[in-house]
Image: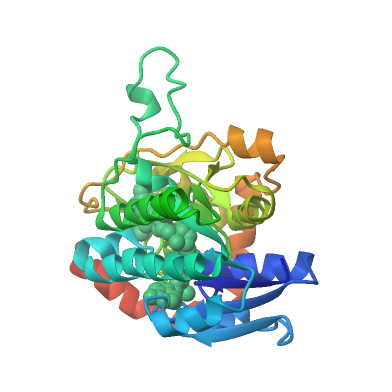
Length: 340
Ligand code: NAD
Ligand code: DAU
């Protein structure tokens, strides 16, 4: 695999994958196809060598552009998406356009030129699980596997579920050489400040109190984005065609615990946050069983110390104020309008 296209490669997770490939696989050239929406940022790719990474600013729903790029590549790794649940509750249409029509456009081109396709998806396609405290006995509880039935809750997760199903159908009906990964919540540097962890860090850095939805009991299964990237590369290069692999690093934590840890690591009083309106349809708990990826493909996450990863992430936002500061006022204005 010498030439790959990474869609959404100027976003949070896509740009981490591009850096991972550039660092570890010198023989691979990356073309990033990214529309540079509010969530995409050229700066996420700064300092990468021009002979290794080329940025094409364009839309994955643009059939002619996608066709011209896909016919000259060995593989497409598809990250581009509208990715934020809260935005999807306010305006679902861009989610339908990018996540469904965009994925359709890419897999049609890959089918035409018999190009390997990897689809980056989310654990949210499975809906949510009960909180451990609501389960009988010791409450070990079930986790998501690739056999869990789809049951998405939000416009975002339903469009991601729909895009997964398109890929599955293209594999079966047209022999598309594709794999799918469903990963849990990522954290790390370069994450847009609308998302939970960077919102709270940049709130504290802006003298705004952190905001917790509802009681903060909802659980997310945190994984460092570096581990997501190594998982996707492993699946792209070693995964069985037609298979779905779940990526997770046993990082379950409730939101209250996370916000308190951020406050503590930033030298603030642990109680210094506000409870705000809950998200409509808010999923309770996500938890990934990644046994298939670990046992079949030998993947092992490396960045599993959450406290250490969070400390490094806080340091990154402290040292890179120019990266996020210009967006802060607008992001908070949008939240305040919805009581959050
Ligand atoms: P992000 O919002 O930070 O980045 C998305 C990128 O896609 C941006 O660079 C944006 O400009 C680009 N994009 C959006 N619409 C486009 C279009 N029509 N054409 C071309 N480019 C377009 O998102 P992220 O958090 O990095 O997520 C990346 C992918 O990973 C998504 O598919 C998401 O569903 C999936 N995922 C995210 C998480 C997470 O925790 N953030 C977890 C699992 C899976
Ligand atoms: O599980 C994977 C998914 O994780 C990805 O598919 C999505 O693209 C990604 O955005 C993320 O979705 P979440 O909705 O879980 O992430 P978010 O950062 O928006 O919220 C995490 C949790 O924190 C969620 O329970 C809502 C809560 N929250 C969020 C914000 C922004 C708060 O309590 N306060 C906040 O200010």
